[in-house]
Length: 410
Ligand SMILES: Cc1cc2nc3c(=O)[nH]c(=O)nc-3n(C[C@H](O)[C@H](O)[C@H](O)COP(=O)(O)OP(=O)(O)OC[C@H]3O[C@@H](n4cnc5c(N)ncnc54)[C@H](O)[C@@H]3O)c2cc1C
Image 1 (spheres, protein in one colour):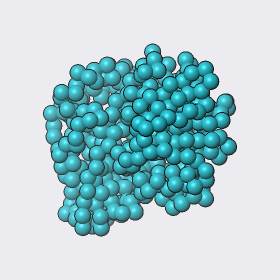
Image 2 (cartoon, rainbow, N blue to C red):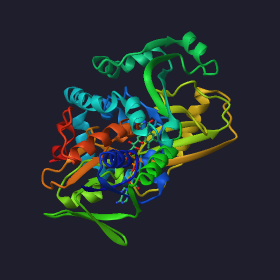
Image 3 (cartoon, protein in one colour):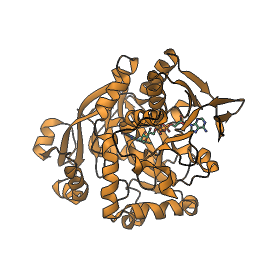
Image 4 (cartoon, rainbow, N blue to C red):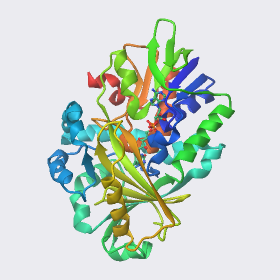
């Protein structure tokens, strides 16, 4: 079987490599601008605890105040608001407590064994050097702030995700340089990090190619299934395959909608800063809860990543989100310095209900999807790719894939 994969981020390359290992002929087509992909610039955290959906009860009510406060990590390009109203309506509906429970149950199988899934994908390849199993800490200003997140922690506990509480003294013993704004933490084991996400995906891609996978650098314009196969048309050529998987991250909608499928997908723009030779490094990745950013020790320095900005795929990065991240690192480590710093903006592929789209189309037997992994795509990419490869080859996975069907959007 010949399978074409559109999109070479972590989801696409994982799908391609798992298919190749099962003797499929695979062509991976990507624009080839690696640092545009979310998989390049993410926070690097393998967050098996990240089962709490983005939309939770009460979130939208807080949004107007957050948007008006330049110290809160939510930004909106106001001219874009009308375009995203349908997505926002579905996002709001997904935030009902009963629906949140269903979504968390749907995310759990994609996240629970993340480190093992990364190890299985990367074992024996140059990419395995970037995987570091370890702890993950949520850092709060104080105990009261932790208590205000009780809904999410209860949900995690229901799924067996627990950790240890650290008061200010324990936290300071763990990380003596941490600032006075951090007075409580929740520390979980069984997590991990990728210490260079861009190099990790590049190594996996090079391995895939070196083992016989085919790679084309091109912009795919359309996917056209017929009775005997599927044509994947790109600028300057086409590939004919038996099956296609659309793994185009936040850009997937333009390929999916002409096939007659609706999908509620938006770019949740996020930012990172990398500080080389930082004066401080956390011993493990932190989620700095009041700033909603992660601080992750990386191979090339300290990376802080976070912010949610709505503004679509085309507008240039803003300055305010970067300034906010810089203030955040100064709060975490007062007097923080580095030899250099660089900023990046990318697009989280976010469905309105925080569940990815994974699996085949009911109308087009040859078309499959693997996108919509919002804040959790690095964590769940290898598992999603393995699952998708199985589905493409006609397997029956032992987890319920109904929550991920594209048809849920109507
Ligand atoms: C600031 C930030 C921090 C994050 N932190 C974390 C984290 O700590 N942990 C975590 O698990 N997740 C994190 N994420 C989320 C994670 O990065 C994404 O969910 C994940 O990378 C999505 O992978 P993907 O393969 O679906 O999409 P992408 O990585 O965006 O890849 C899609 C690829 O498809 C290509 N493409 C699209 N359309 C076409 C086309 N028509 N023709 C050719 N090529 C096409 C694109 O160019 C791109 O290369 C973060 C994201 C951001 C932005």
